[in-house]
Length: 412
Image (tube, rainbow, N blue to C red; front, side, top):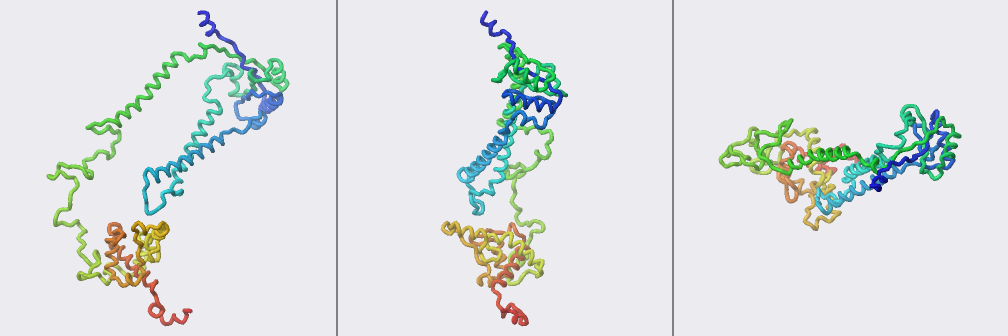
């Protein structure tokens, strides 16, 4: 019993000395005097930031910027390594022959992770360096110190300072112009330091209650129910509709997806004109453009626009088969894997092809060239054919056939 009484005995300890000063300027001079006297464990308190107090106290620049930079650099490295690992080993995906390791592609994710870790390091680093949260401090029990939030300016020197001496320290603070000096004491004991049982119970109960929503969410996400989840605002989440690849009891065969009805054509989709829709005239490749395609500069411009979007990546802007995809395929040696180089559209063999045959090639593709019929409308396909004819003529032009006679003397 005597041992328990000794451990629970309240001990009155000295925290340090608290000195009050009249103005911010006096506080700065006092900080300089205390620092000059050799004290290292002291702090200044004021109701607002005082310019010049940091150098007066000898406070060095914080390491927080270095922590932020280190966390940002770590985030940058982790993001690049993560994307490299995912794109090259875990799930390599070849998109148009582009390299698997591509720094420009990785910039958005790397930027986000860099900012994320830097922000966390700044936030939590600030709290840690300032020893926050600090809900209690010996100074909080001093009545005079309460004015530090309104009009008081104070210097507090801790008793743990190696140079602390009650009389000498008081003399130093008085010489610096202190208007009042008080000892700051606090009581400590094992029982005093222990959290009250009510606080412990509140923490336990609050923690358990906080886990209830997460447990409920986990249960809902991991369990199945024949009924849809309750939606406060359902919008159009639940509709009487049939999704792809699902069954339906409306039709005898039980299929939700329906084939076109035999012998029927959707309205506006008859496409009976072989010349315009299939590039045929009397069963042969058309040698003339359909009447629906006007031979105008507007049609030529439209054809150039569609050609540059769909054709130039492989065939090149000039139609010579030297597009950016073809050039990369040559650099990486793709021919060894079965790569078929794009054709030179300006060659004579293509220049002599009927218009309808070029139209059919665009529609259904040929060799490794895919079909562009589903992507390009018929009128745009004919416009591309018209632009290809212009490229072929420009590539195979001669002075005798393509330059007016009155302009030929100007050619050197």
